[in-house]
Image 1 (cartoon, rainbow, N blue to C red):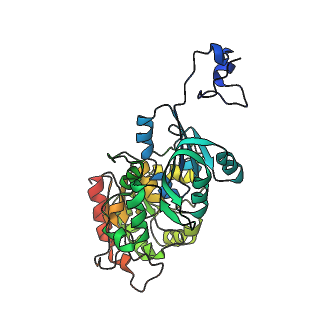
Image 2 (image 1 turned 180 degrees about the horizontal axis):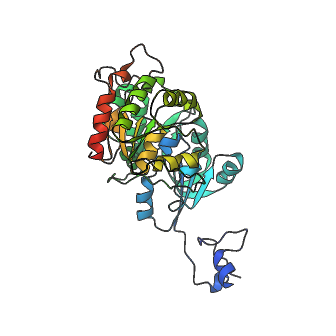
Image 3 (image 1 turned 120 degrees about the vertical axis):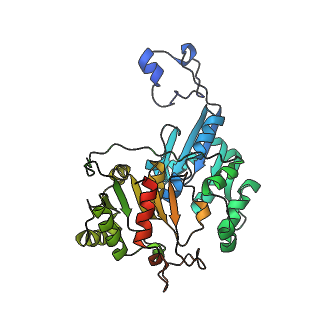
Amino acid sequence: MKILNNCFHFKGDLPCRPHKKYGVHCNDCDHFIPIDKRILIIKLGAAGDVIRTTPILHKLRAEFPKAQITWLTDSPLFIPKKYVNTILDWNEKNVIWLQNREFDLLVNFDKDSHALALAENIKAVQKKGYLPDEFGKCRPADMDAEHKWQTGLWDDLCMQNLKSYPKEIFEMFGYEFMGEKYILDLPESDKKFDLSDGKKIIGLNTGCGTRWLTRLWGDDNWIEISNKLYDKGFVPLLLGGSIEHEMNTKIAANSKASYLGYFGMKDFLNLMNKCDLVVTSVTMAMHIAIGYKKKLVLLNNIFNKHEFELYGLGTILEPADKTCLGCYKNTCEIECMSTISPDLIFDTIEQLLGT
């Protein structure tokens, strides 16, 4: 019996869908869909970076509509199922499987040592992105990745960079970025969030995780903007995870903000999707907001603002004194974020919403 293992339907270990539905075999099947290119993407984390890497899928699917695309990641929830055939979480089983595969194109966007080592060991006709050098350190696989690699090495080059992250990602493939949007699925959730009563919901993402705590805006500021939003007819909704729970509980107790608690990621995504606008520092939440096409007020102090592609959805607000932007400090005696006033943020919200 003829076997067509280069068909999208063929599984190798189980009956394929056409066989189950019509009883056909490979030699008499009219449902053959050939795989013309095998592509592996390695982008493990962070979650926000995974989300803002998804625009490249527009280009890959347009250029290779019959490609079998596999994506290895630490954040499988953020990989769009419509565009990626196989989504793999990083674990021993999947790593072993990949090491015994062969691809036409492998692109590794990760600089972590384990990602570099895996990219080196997997067989592929063409490799792009990052690979290990003779000392096991990160190097660009070719000149297309040189710019992105260099801006990650030197702070001065990073702050001089005028290219957005998606543009740099496209260039690593040798493509031109044409404004392709984030692709972010909305998972099903059992939670029913009904908050607005016809009012616009303003998501206030108060935290920034545990790294670069200089991104924090301060409890008193969140309290003030919450009260101002509520008094003007908005619903201020505090957002965050377990790390922000204590802070958000305190802010809610001292303001007119709503706080529903913290949730698993699927529920958090659905809660964010309820918002009309999100105020946040540079975090995963900003990329979720962009993915769901929400209006955005982005508070930035330590990063080069040019790396952020907002697609016309929002405004970036920075401290008045910009002499030390891009410091990448975790603590600092200068609380520069406090110079971004609640009044400025409120005025920006009204401008973005057209109220």
